[in-house]
Length: 368
Image (cartoon, rainbow, N blue to C red; front, side, top):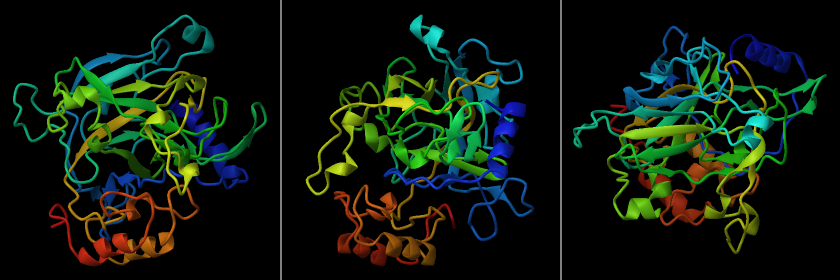
């Protein structure tokens, strides 16, 4: 939902009392689309802003686009998702939303499939590959907002988000979906916000618009054990297609939490015992459902101690590490990127500090 309605939601949030929600366990950093002279986040319109050099490529083509019914004519051009992120909340293609009657009738959610590099050339460097760290980033046009709405009642959260499943493929026929988690407890209404730290491996959780340009990162290592990857049908070192499928936030569509560790099971870690319904802003209209802005390919991140992804291990990273010292997954203050030692033990301790010390002041090649 973009345009005038989205502006109303944004202004309502700015003029009302912000409620601080308890952060959830999934606090992966959003990847900056633009940076300034200090290598930190910059708004796209800032005079010194440049596209973040951590990106080495962007979606080059559209294989298919099948929106849900009702997308406005201003938002139904799929090529708007090609090329670099613009940080413009209006420069998007919408996937559309489904109301309850359409869901009950089995109408399929909207989706788009993007192409990366030359499908006929396996060596094309613009394919997505399983490199060190995150591999690609999806930019939706969500934005930070918390507010009380007189029609729909009290709504609290941090981001107005329209979420989507993410799937990847080598041949454009066989796709594997990233296993996701969504811990939002119930419906939030058409203008509702969610706590983004309660969401993992779903597109659309990071704000991108109104001067903020960040995207949600994905790591192909998350799907390395899937059967379709193990048998070679999907090659995570040769991903040519990324498909994003809108999630109507009614609660009729589930995450795949059972594939993930439950942060509430410390110290004897165990997986979630059930999958959860996914809730987000619903029902939306016009620029409805997930609004895709761009998908970028990342350079390898060879230094895991670069916690904030600015390309160098320095004071910013040390400060973050100290703040998360001796915390475990799910605990207040936990920062997932501080859990650096392999295999990951979901606890930030001396083994992680050794990685930080070993990489201190090292710089990524893409920053050079």
